[in-house]
Image (tube, rainbow, N blue to C red; front, side):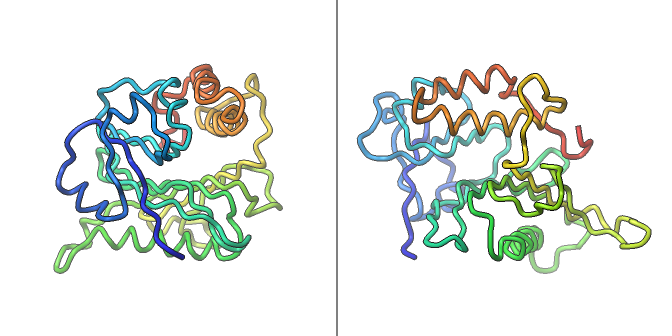
Length: 245
């Protein structure tokens, strides 16, 4: 499959490590494009948290799929966006790698078609990102937990009713945790059927927001989806994966 270059709007000068990381996979555009709009598709908006990014701006950039705020600790965004050729191929909307203050790293992705070898690929991605923390001669004690969070639009475990499943490495009989280094959260969006009045946890807001976004984009644009997110309180931390709250 040919490599696609992502077009990304940035609000200021970029650090050298970001430019090196993106390489030729990203075409950087000036912030003026976000203010005036563009006839060509803009895939992502990259900011340092200062400019106002509202529904009107997103309506001018209808192709945006990723908004990244470097100020909240996002290390990088994996681009480009891969289109699926067949049902067994993946459609990867966004990969984000983030790190919290304790050093734990998070790998977050959204998959429309999580079929075929999705489970094997997810495990391989986790392993690759976990071992990538260490360089030659470094102590294994430096390893920090790697937590994968996968939003999928295809039921992976139809026999289970819960939409949020957490996988860890445990002893089969006694359920003793082998290590806290590995954790994988699967959120199966088709299973979520709560109404707004039935939301009981902060995490419940995300499936509703994603459903509202998918519905609102063709009709009301980003403003409508933004109103839905605002009514759900999205915009502040919504889930603590360490305390499961």
